[in-house]
Amino acid sequence: MVSTGSAATGSLIGLALGDALGFPTEFHDVPSILAKCGPWRQMALPDPAFVTDDTQMTLALGRGLRTAMGRGDLTPAGLVGPVREEYVAWWRSPDNNRAPGGTCLRACELLSDRDLPWARAAQMGSKGCGANMRVAPIGLAPGLSPRQRSGAAQLQSALTHGHPTALAASDLTAYAVRALADGTPPAELPARLRVYAENHRTVYREDWLGDLWRRSQDRSAAAFIARGWDECLGVLDRLDAALRAPDPEGDPCLATGDGWIAEQALATGLLCFLLFPDEPLTALRRAACTSGDSDSIACLTGAFAGAYLGAGAWPGEWASRIEYREELLALGEVWDA
Image (cartoon, rainbow, N blue to C red; front, top):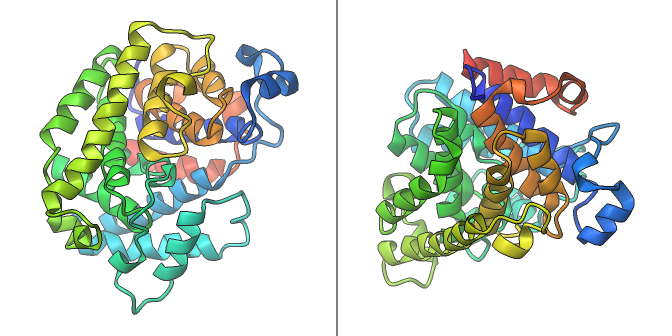
């Protein structure tokens, strides 16, 4: 089963379901999760199905992107304003009470100063998974060229997380979502990601990032961005090794990392999806029963599975209960149309 015109809806709903499933298990080790939830293959969606800042920020990016694209061809200047406004609105919201990441909070506070150039808000030392847990809308929005998609993915990361690995992992995550939505067979995805990373290794997107790299200690823009792509290539090595000797019953974090940082969140979310490419609920449950950043890992797993399988991947009884359901559906349906 592959997506039949509902990749955006399927991906956004899957992301939120994974987020809600992993919300209660984050910060717990696997034995504790099993003691609390029972066998991982039977994990139930919490009731009520609340999500975390992962879904909230995905929606913030989605709204900003929709606004920017509604004004014409997507450009760096056209994207920054709406997304910056949405990130700041999220920071100010009373609903921002789901254990948000410190990097996002610090950066969004700086972004709230309209006189401050956006690049000064970027936290250059942070490559936390907040950079790419929210990037799925960039991969799902129709009509973007590969260059626009790459640049937008990196720019939305740079507004908060300026580390080159955060930029590269966000780019790679958006590329993976788009590839799956376009029908790339899951078994072929890791090789395609590697080629993409190798081809972009020294490509600094100055048209989207300006002189952000000068805030680093790197000798050149190419050296700056290569540092990020090299870390992504390293974690793709770990993903390939895990897929050569798959262990569905083992904690995926032991193979590809705990997911607190961007490249590990990407790889571990992918691993959970690729272990069960045609069993989306099993993939979500595996991702939620992990010793690392379970909600972020599971939300990425859901984004990948939903992009590939479409909205039909998710049982109605689950999808109907997810927090922010109406907004997720509205955004997904606009892009699927």
